[in-house]
Image 1: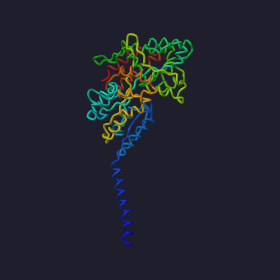
Image 2: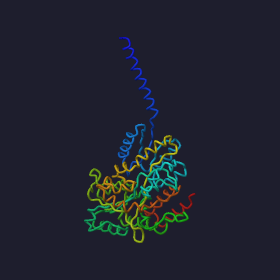
Image 3: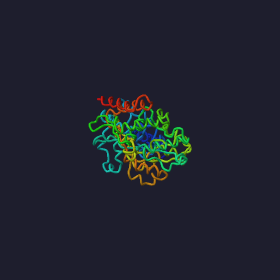
Image 4: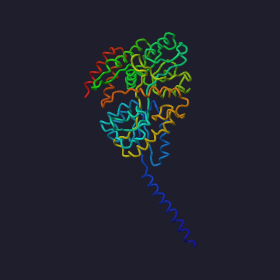
Length: 419
């Protein structure tokens, strides 16, 4: 009686250890590790993305996601450089890159994975972020455009009853605020030689009814509304209405200047509104209004640029099913509504949800007018080259080195010569 017991005691731990070891092998074999690339600034914060990802991993214990965050300016470069090594499974990409990515095979075609029933539930402007022709290269994640932020206290002191609805009214109000000494430079913008400058220029092109390319695909931004857009931007600098440092600013600089109470007007993405209401980040809490960016006399009623972004699976990913599951989770309506303070959802129904509207009614109201007016930057495979040419041309004009017409004519010749 006594012998079997010790024997049994020895056998059971061995069996348990073996079972545990086998379990460990199975767990390791079942676990999938994804690598995902995001940006640091604007829209969802790094903390938001980490929280979303933690919730995804909790719901999907077999998947681990390693996150990497880089400045927007490094996002494309990182993605392109990683193609050879297959460094990422999931990448965030701007609305301006799908044509290039598709042509060079950077992203997987996920047309067969997209739930067609979801297509009409999501704003068309968001779909343009991931769509090229009738093919899909990801799911839209960030639906964004630029809005006009204004300091309500400054406008009240200036005797201005309502924010500007046109660029002409913006000029007039900025002049009044400057004349009354309420702000040395009433307007602040992100006009550094970067994509931010092209995004702002696009918004002005939409206001003045211009176009980047004509029906034949030839440059047209150097005439009509495209030329008027740059002339307007230059005029605000010459009159001392736009802060001259804007020519070195990116979006976060704009946020800091406006939140510091140094400007009456700023053009920026959605994320700025919530941060202007944070006492740790802003000196103008409770004094911030947000409306659609102005239109222009003889042009559009409101202006907007499509600044949306999507999530795609890289061509080299060895885990496309897990990557798609992760992308589907991040872009789902419940997750987007939970994190709707820095970026508004892609889902139409979300805009009547209290989870989204509560506390940011002004943002949602502005979005109602702006989302449908989002104007695209040129959708061409050589977009990066086009953007670089435009950035240099716009900067030269803003610095007063050449006239707006000469700058855009030169840019048009260079764009036309691209193969």
